[in-house]
Every structure is written in C-alpha cells, then in structure tokens.
Image 1 (cartoon, one colour):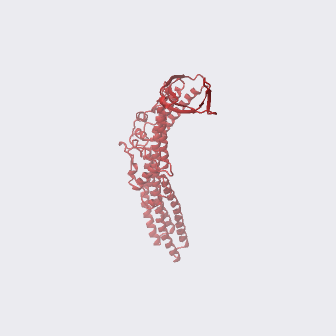
Image 2 (tube, helix red, strand yellow; image 1 turned 180 degrees about the horizontal axis):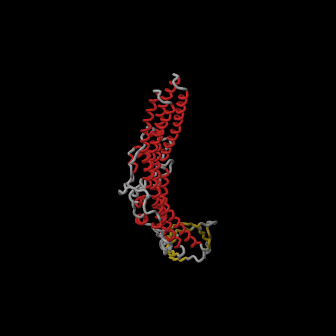
Image 3 (cartoon, one colour; image 1 turned 120 degrees about the horizontal axis):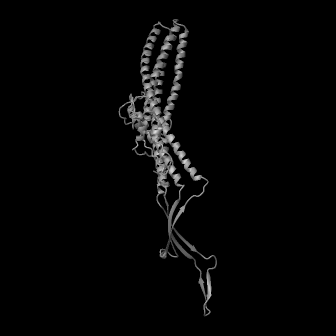
Length: 493
C-alpha cells in the first residue's frame, strides 16, 4: 500500500529550529533522515485514532486503575517532573540576561576614640576649659545599575537554547510517562497470563490425580503392570513441579506492579488475587500516516528540540568572538545624619568595550565544539526517527503474528481436548495403554498454555503498538503534581 514520502511529511510535521544565529553551519533538515518511502507492513487507511487513553480499549477496569495509580505516584515519573522544573528555572535565568541588573546598598558607621575621653585648652584670659571627645556617625545610600548589550545575539541565542532544552525535557517527561504506562500494562498482562497458566496446571493436576488413582486400581486388579502407575505418578509430579515456578513468576509481576504504582512490592496482592482473563483489545489500530505517528512520539519531539538547543549554542559561542559592550552607572550619597542624607547626591556613568585579542584559540575551539554538538544532536534525532519507525513496524508484525498463533492454538486446543477425552474413555475401558493417555494429556496442557501465551502476546503487541504510535499522553494536558514526600521537606510548587 503506497505511502507518502516520509521525508516530505517530516518536513511539514517536525520543522527543525535550526537556530544557529550568525552561524555558517549548514542546517540539518528532515529530508536528510533518509527513511524509506513507505512502511513495509500495510496499516489501516483510516484517520489516526485518539490514543491518549488507549488502555480503555482493553475494557479492563483494573488495568485502568493501575495505570491511573502509576501516573500519579510513579517515582521515575516524579523525577522527570522535577527535571522539567529545573529546565524551566534555567529558561527564566537565561531570559533575565536580557534585562539590566540593579542593586542597592545602605550603610551606617560610627567612629569612636581609641583612648582618652576629653581634651583641654587654655583661653586668652588664662582659663583652662575641658572638652569631652565623642564619636562621629556616617550614613550612606547607593544604587548601582549595569547592562550587558547583546550586540551579536549571544544572549538571545542562549535563550533559544534554554527554551528548546526546556521543551526537550518536557517531551522526555512524556516519554517516561509512556514507558511507565506501557510497562504497567505489560506486567498486568503477564500477571494474568501466570494466573491462566496456574489454572491450566491445577486443572491438569486434578485430572492426573484421577488418572493415577485409576492406574493404581488397575495395577492392584492385575489388569496392567506397575508401569502404568509409575508413568502416571511421574507425569503428575512433573505437572506439580511447574506450579511453584508459576507462582514465583506471578508474585514477581505483582511486585513489579506495586513498584510501578509507587507502592510496596506486596501492596497489590489482595487486589489482583482473584483470577481474571487476559485483557483483549481491538483487532486493529488505525495508525494514520507515518508523519502523524512521528509527530506524536515524544522521544522524536525531544530529539528535535535537543537539536534546536544544540544549534542555538553555536550562536552563543560565535558571539564570544566579537566585542562586548557593557553600560553601567551608580548614584550614592552620604551624611553624618539621616535628615541631611539626601542633601548631596553624586553619580557616575560608564561604558566599557572589551575584545579578546589572544586566547590561544580557546573561543574558536568552543565554536567548533558547539558545531560538533549540533552534528551529534542531528544524528541522535535521525536515530530517534528510524527507531520510531522500527518500533511501529515490529509492533504491527508482532500483533499479526500473535493473532495468527491464537487462531491456530484455538484449533489445536479443540483437537487436543477431543483427543484427551477419547484417550481417557479408552484407557478406563481398557482399550488403550497409559502411554497414549499420557501423551494426550501433555498435548492438551501444552495447547492450553499455548493459547494463553498467544493471547498474552497479542495483548502485549497491542500495548507495544500503542506506545510506538505515541499514545498515552496529551501535549495540552497540565503537568501533574509530585506524589507526597516523606519527612518535613516541602514540595516547593
């Protein structure tokens, strides 16, 4: 099925910032990504679905509840939110460099004599007069202003870099959110798979207990040799041995779900104790055109914003090669008393131009380093696009493969069940040996587990496809608050 050229769609969907002000560095474009013109696996032609709450399509309330808990309390997600807040404050600090800085000062001092409390003098008439020597006070006020003129756009390039970095961190938070959601859903499916396999093993064990009793009765009756009883006992023990292993796997998935939802590993044991079927989603997903999927992928968006940030750093480095202009001024006053503090005010203004003459090539090396950083960011962006396409294609293939496997295992289970019923009847009637019964029971258990495994793989592939298409997040949704902290530390929101 023909698809529009991905390169052209990327140009429209993900325009690169390419914000290297004053740079001769060649801009990287989406056309350089060199991805194939079409998906090798045909997808739905319908318009892309709204996948922001894809887990609702499984119609499993417990799954939706677990994902909601993970969204609110997962600690990896909380770390991503704090990193986003740090990036936002860095952007605010970068913007402040465009404005002048203003500082004020005030002071008070008093001078006291070190020794001797009075002085004497003789008047013309011979009278001696004594004067006490006291301290002196001084009050002062000052106001200083300075401004770094952004002649060559270095500050503005720094702001663009900080803004792009903030946006990149925001998309990285969304990528963590998608990972947490899909990991929660995957472990929930695996927990239900372990429950299904435990049920299969226990059902088979009950049948094998009955077969063992029949074999022992027939041995005692002299109808068969003890070989039948030993085969029955061996088969029963092997089936029983799988149950502790399955219980361990189930406990591990439940513990992982507890951690993913920000709780203790055993917090969900009672909530998940009642067995439920493996969740089933829709048979197909309308993926839309590739550009829509790539635009919805937060990791691709984050890589594109990282490229924009790295490109802006070239302008920051190049601005250091040119002269810098600083403007400033100050106003001050001083007096021995507060009432006359503002009687005399003095001020000064200055301008300063500075230019690096020789630095051993350090500044030009910084420019080359920034260009290399932009090249690295471009290749990371290109890699993220190809990885996204790879994940989408792999998920589509896995989903179709699991659907085919499920259909075949349903046929195999029907045949194995009929075979086992017939073998049990014939053995109890003395028309066949225990080896035939044993093989039919093993085939039935294998078919049951195979069908459960195929259902699990189908649900997992569907989860993988939803995540590969960028479902599970909304760019317009507000950033959630952090989960409660322990101790006395405040949130700082």
